[in-house]
Length: 488
Image (tube, rainbow, N blue to C red; front, top):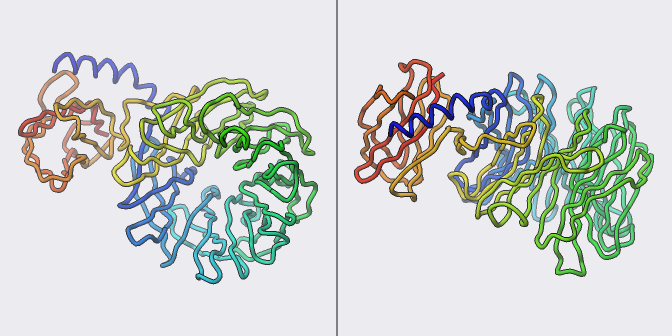
């Protein structure tokens, strides 16, 4: 025990600078299926995490989680209008709130309408509006405007020129439509992502089988604030199916697209695809690792003012097995700076990555293993070299567990804590235990019986002196030692 405590003390003080860099990984959810969409800044520090949850009745609701800078949950909210609602993207309106875009189920005849929700900083709904025609209409990306309005994009099957058209809409500050545009041909066309330039122009990107050399090609456009199309481009290889899931404006006001390219002649292996174009859509460079044996794809890409490119998605080629989250920092010429994969033998995917002011990034996705429920929202905060604090558990408890029964794991939240912590077991049994708290020097400072009801127990810590402690839980035939409960 003393050797463990000595090691933990050394680790705590040597790793303390990592806490100032605010790295963590955490999961969030409610019973059922939970899927991460994006994390955005919160008004007073920390982040607001957005996702979707599906309960046992099959309806989907929008799930919002307010977390602090170390990933501890502050509160959560469900946005439910009584039907099926799905969030696909979120924009942050500084110190005012959020714009959430997605779609909602209307009827078996009409299908879905686009859904725009405006909330305050605490994710209380201020208003919501739907947009659509006589068929399916779905929105996937949104940006806020200086006049407090929005531009969003997606696809429409209502009165389209072909199967479906790519769709763009601009609204005012209360969601009233200012203009809409449909782009496409006789086939299927969709925009998945939007970004703005520094001169009130905008890029939209997605896919098309109406234009280009292959069956499915990259499709992108540049347009003005007033909805005037400056140009459209389609680009593709006859032997590939290519989709752009994310678009960002580069530091030179060109465009970077991230997505996937599927080799139609080689077992349909899908590889991540990154391409750089100039401001009028001319090709500059691309990255397509066709030599990899398994699938991967990019879901989100951004470029910072210092020219660093970050992209995130999933890979089956590296990591723990199955699908794992991949995150890469690249130079402006797409040469590698840093790369990381995060995951285990199960499935972890990323939908969004965002640079953070401290030089790192925050990745939002989903996991079907590292949380409490069937699937959970997964958030990883990484620093400037793609490091995250591996001593931080998915409950943001700083942990290193030892047990003679590896099937039972103990998690602590919140951590750091001020008044109390909730201890959660991976089993839902009712158990009598003994809880001991030690100082980092090995002194016993707390010892009391503790009852777990359906796998959960509450431990008061308000009377403890702010410091770091070791929690040790003694079960009838098992000892679990936990490192570094931080008392604020």
